[in-house]
Amino acid sequence: DQCRAHANWSNLVHQACSEIRASSLSGECDYAEEFNRNPLTKFAGGHSACVMRRAELSVAMNLAKDEKHKAAEAVQAAFERCYNDTAPFRRHLN
Image 1: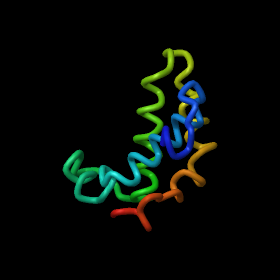
Image 2: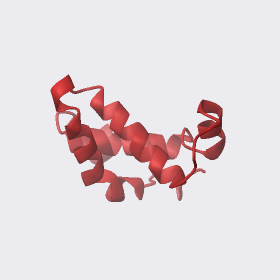
Image 3: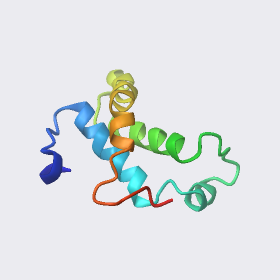
């Protein structure tokens, strides 16, 4: 994302976009991985819910404790555009 999208890493929305794409395209949110992480996981929302959850957790790790709410806001702002951006792949791998 650094070279392709010229990300500004001090911008939380850019960070969120990169994390959304990473979670979405890496396979870490496919059903088998989610089941292995927690067999009791409900699959409601499936792939997109997992991607959103993991992106929020990752972005929140870069914030002070009293600013954690900003992670959810940044992910929400970037989610639709970045979740649907599958370049250089043609589609999600799941």
